[in-house]
Every structure is written in structure tokens, then in C-alpha cells.
Image (cartoon, rainbow, N blue to C red):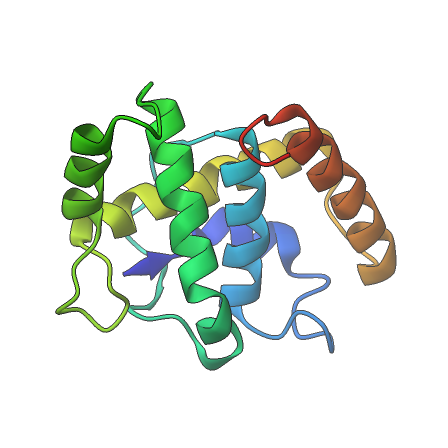
Length: 155
């Protein structure tokens, strides 16, 4: 199950329900991309926060890209080289479940949620609580671009 912690919703509340950020999944995605780009994870602070057990319609086209970025981040965090086929296959078997609608195992959901929450912590540390969408998005783009530039697996 994808989760958004209550403090994440609170932090974004002034710009949520805007034309660009309509759903909790939008918040989840923004945080997840920062978490994956920075390789930052953090344990969840609450068992609450369930949003859905699948990719919502707006993100279905990005599902494979998101999963691929997640697998790459996990391999990096575990110190596994892409060329180590046996270990990479082990990670794929651990996190992918073709029998689930999201194609993810429960362990994958847990780790993705930790990346998303870790990304939120990076955002909250480097940016003030957003009040205006355009300003937030410009600052977000600058932060994301700097993280991607520093991540050798993304450049």
C-alpha cells in the first residue's frame, strides 16, 4: 500500500487541491522522486496514511519508470553492481510480484514508502513549507536537478 504520512499532508496543505497538485499521490510522487534521486530513506512514523494499493491513472504510464528507478536505487543502496546478475535477479524477485496489480511485493511498498518519506525529509530540510505553488515548483526543480546531477546512476 502506498502511504503518505500525516506530516507530509500537513506540510503540503497550502498547495494541495490546486490545479497541479490534486491528489495525495501527487505529493507521494514528488517526495519519492527526491528520495530516489538522493538515495534517502526513512522509516515511516505512523501506520496511518494509506492512499492506494496501485498506481493511480495519472501515473500508470510512469509505473515502469518509477519501479526501475526504485530498483536502481535499491541496488545502489545495497552496494550491488548492475553487472552482478545473480544479485540483481534476487532483488527483482524480492520486490516484484507479477500477481499484484501494482506489480510490487509488500516489501517493495515498504521500501518505496521509506524513499518517499525520506524524500519528504530532504524537502522539508531544504525548503520552507510551501504557500505558493509556482514558487514551490521552481525550488523543487532546482533541488531535484542538483540531486540528479550528483547521482552518477541518473546522469
